[in-house]
Structures are given as structure tokens and as C-alpha cells.
Length: 126
Image (cartoon, rainbow, N blue to C red; front, side, top):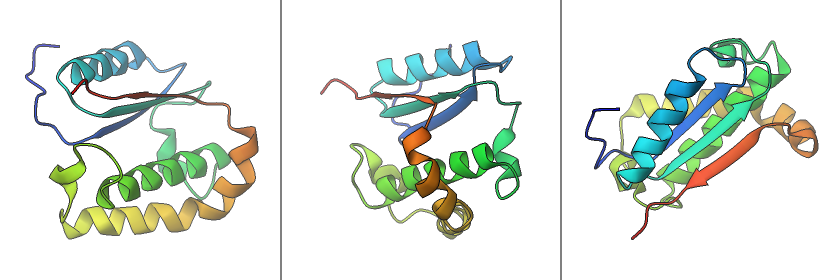
């Protein structure tokens, strides 16, 4: 990864274990963490590329969308270090969070005990 990632807002990355771009996702996460960016990554087993777009139709997609919305909430509420870059962000981000949250909340509660994703958080060294 050649880009300078310093100063990016917190990143949330979801990838499938079967994803062709999994290695690229891992490289991005590692480079961002080295640059001091708060990064959270989830690797979901055997999902197709962009499975999240099927939220409301496929349980794993609905759960992934709910987890994305929860991340957006944590950043917006200032509960993630270095989240200030997204505080007071664009209305479209708020609308996206509301939409994702509404579509995934009920199913997220049901599946929480059965979560099969690998979730890793990288905190920048301060």
C-alpha cells in the first residue's frame, strides 16, 4: 500500500473469507493501523463479494449491515478514538446509519449469540 493513510477517520472493513480481495483488505487494514488510524475488521466465512447489499433478504447481510451501523454510531457518538473526523459529518452518513440500523437491529439481536465472524480491532499506539 503506497498511499499515505495518516489522518483518515476510523475505518470499518468487512470482507469474506472467500473474497478475492481479502488480501487487499488485510493490506489496507495493516497499513492504516501502522499510520495510526483506528481500524476494525471483520472476516465473514464464505460470503460472496458485496454480500451486505442483500440486507433485509439474507440474514448474514442484515447482520453485516447492523454491525456497520453500530460502528457508525460509535464513531458519531465519539466512543472511538480519533472519531472526530466523522463528528458532525454529512447528513447522508446519518441517513445511511439510520437505514442500516433499522434493517438489521432485530436480526442482529437474534444472531448475536451465533456470530461466526472474526472481529479484530487495531488501536493506534499513542
